[in-house]
Length: 255
Image (tube, rainbow, N blue to C red; front, side, top):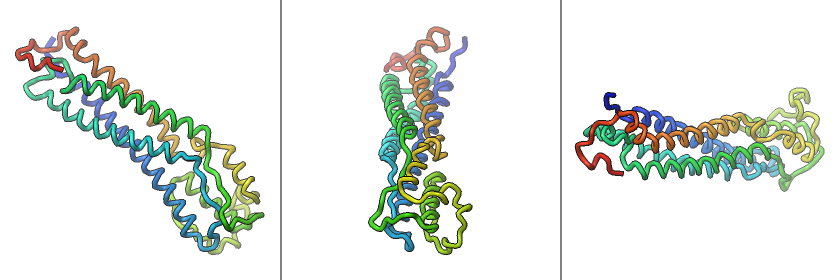
C-alpha cells in the first residue's frame, strides 16, 4: 500500500481533545466567576435586605477549580502535541516512522496522565453535582417569617444560580408583587423550608450548565483515552498494514 501520514488520523483527535479542554475550562471558569458575582451582589448590592442570607454552594467551586486546572494543563500540553504532530510533515517523518507526533513516548505518557486526571476531576464533579445542592444560611440580619420582599429576594438568587447569570438585587416595588408570581417561593416562610425545597434536587438537576459540564467531561475522558490508544498503536498498525515508507534515516525511528 502507498505510504500514508499517520498524523492525518491523530491530528483531528488531538484537535478534538484541545477543543473539549477549552470548553471545560470555559464552563468551570464561568461557574467560579458567577458564584463570586452572586456572592458580591448579596454582600454589597442588597440595599433593602443587607445581611439577610448568605449562599452556600457546598464547596462545588473547589471542584470547578480542579477542573479548570486540569483543563488549563490539558489545553497547554495538547497545544504542544499539535505542534509536534505538524512537525511530522517535515521530511515525511511520519511516513517513515508511523508515528503521529514527535517525542512519541513522552506524548503518549502525558496523554495517559491526562486521561487519569480528567477521570478524577470529572468523577468528582459528577459525584458532587449529583449529591449536593446550593442552600441558604442565616445572615446577621436574618428574620422570619419571610415577607413578600424576602421571598422575592430568595427567588431572585435562585434564578441567578440556576441560569448562571446575575443582574441587580435591588427589589424596588417588591411589596406590590403577588405571591402567584413567586411560584413555589410564595409559600416558603423559613430558611428550613427554603433549603428543603432546594435539597429536593441537586446541582445536576437545577443548573443547566452543570449538565453540560458533566456530559462534556465524560466525552472528554473517552476522547483523550481513545487518542492515547491510537497514539501508541499507530506505529505498529502502520507497520502491520504496510503504510510506512522504507526508512532511509535511523533518526526517523527514534522515540
